[in-house]
Image (cartoon, rainbow, N blue to C red; front, top):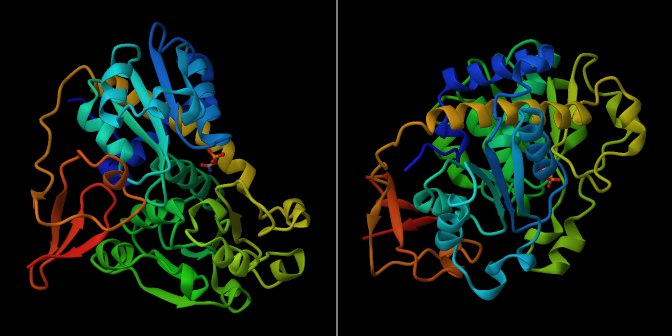
Length: 362
Ligand code: CP
């Protein structure tokens, strides 16, 4: 098995800091890196729509002198004929040196990494995680704020299904002095596992509110997110919540002069176009940073792929228990072995190793 990045916490803080340095060096000296991946191939397996992530991975590999292959929708792959994620990963390992996978079901890239013989990068899995967006976000913050420490960041919008939010909170919880403000409708509040397993063990102070305007003055970073139609089981619930937050130029008057506004994009209407003219708007810088961080990550994983790693013991098997998350890959691919990891011994709380849904076992 090769080293993969499925969750941002698969990378240590020192490794993230090294990736940030590599990305900045690539920005300054692209010619040094132009042939680093000569003869290597990246496969992009996108089972869900994407503009930035897929094309930035492809641009990244091309700028490293490598080649790319792949597909941009499930319907043009043999997944549409019922091929499993495990088989797809084994097949693509015959064609490519590294693969990036986006999938609507949480845990699909994890399954791929368990079965591939090349490194796998999670390019976004359902409402679960999006580690390379986090790498893009961290580089943006570092370039605009000069540090990743002692920052107050407000996350606004869909914090329940917002995979970019889950991954960025996990990463920033490891940096000194991080404070978090969670701004969402109650129906779209942050999943408890992100609070109890990332922020609380790290001692990150956080508050929860439904009111963007009152939170704005204290923020160093406002991280806006889209209310994601595609994640809602109930379309009427989406219609009810879709306009919960709209950041306007008038509202920006309440923000600090040196605050920054981030958004993983795509946006719908949650940031009005007038805000783009504000020097504090950084969402297009995030797009650029994403390409350089993905270049740095591809280089790192291809280097580490020279050696095999021993698969980690990743949970207990309980044949009497099933993950109840309908968006978990185990709901779609029912031959996958259900496995759970213990997160709270006292209360016997386990989490599905694929999607992190909580289960209480006896
Ligand atoms: N930020 C992001 O993941 O964008 P795409 O869906 O366009 O890849």
